[in-house]
Picture 1 (cartoon, helix red, strand yellow):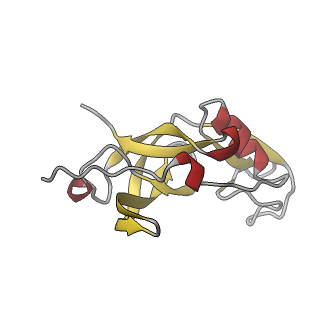
Picture 2 (tube, rainbow, N blue to C red):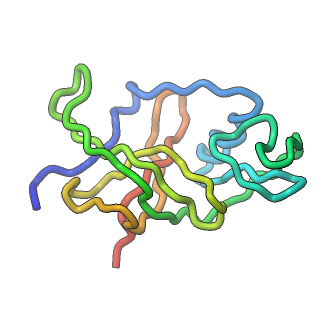
Picture 3 (cartoon, rainbow, N blue to C red):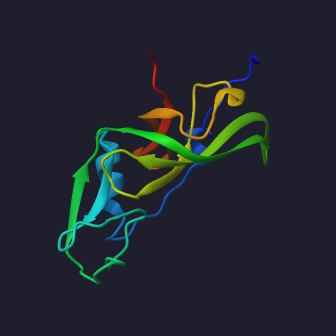
Length: 143
């Protein structure tokens, strides 16, 4: 166990772009809600959001609010970032509870990086980023 805690990039270093397929995800995140795109025809979940369902090709979309919980599917510990040499990040792929096989690429924060492991239960929190948006990041479930 070390004194190092995983964090996320400073707000001003994270910029997003949206389009008609992704903007609802970011609008919900701005409200502190984690959602996943579900096909309105066959129910298949897809992340990132795309115009067509890969299962049935439908353009029907439902945004389903999730519990905000999940588990670490994969991760990497990153020591340093260009221009920010003292930062430690844990980039992760999170399997989202209640969203089928959908996964979200994000960060695990507020944790000693040596304690992160595949299958670790996590919950969403939102980190402010540029232009008033909120970035969904995850921290270990307490207790």
